[in-house]
Amino acid sequence: MNMRESKTEFLKKYGDHYGYNGLIDALREDEFKRLEGCWFFATAAHLLGTVYLDHAAATLHAQSQMRDATDELSQTVLGNPHSASRTSDRAASSISAARESVLHFFNASSKKYSVIFTAGATAALRLIGELFPWTSESRFEFLRPSHTSVVGIRECVLQHSGSFRSVPEEEAFAEFISSDSTAQDNLSSEGPFHLFAFPAECNFSGRKFPMSWADAVHKRTDGRWLSVVDAAKAAGSGPLDIGASNADFVVISFYKMFGWPDGLGALILKNGS
Image (cartoon, rainbow, N blue to C red; front, side):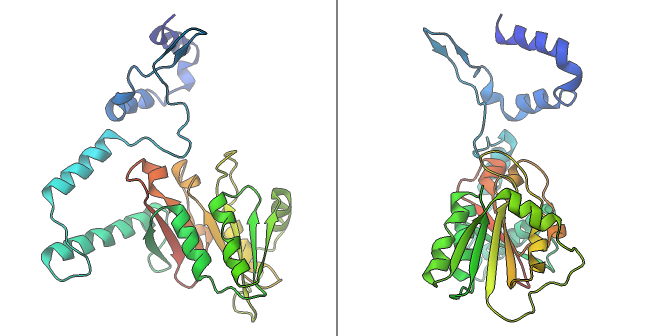
């Protein structure tokens, strides 16, 4: 039985619960036609074709995405946004519009949040680590299933003789679920700043963690805590409401969301932070 026959049999059995009423097949036909014929077939003797089973944080770009980008570049002249000319003004306007689009997509008000474009989520995390006001009393805590880019921030706190700790999932759930949501934030208190980091979705297991943790950490009684949410994985797999989370720092990766352009992300930070 070939792949098409197998799919026909599959749809007969599961068609009522698969494909969002044909949306997946239509999307594949319109946006990912280059996958046509790339099915995986293997025996002990030979291998024919390939199949894209898991994007492993490297999303496939869509045809319309590339077409629109190419059309814009071929029809528009852009200048240095820091200069004074029509082409520079056009570039600055495009960048401003892109920032507004990012904030709108994540339900984050421009009055409360700002967008800094970076060379990916790792660069955004490095920016936080290098500019955070560490002292010898500062503590950096990160959820155990964090990406290595998050864990790397520990090198920054160690440079200031601070400390770090890997927090088990069970401990974090126990603390934040039982936290008093009506308690006052401790950000106005005296003393050093501390940082708690966690992924909105684990890169390895796909397990999601509550965005509400970003706000709950502000109410810890052992110092002034800020939060950083690694949303590189989560932003590529579902909606993300940054506005409701009250997170101080959120890092995202556009190529993990859209597949192109490579090496582009952003740091979304709360202005008050």
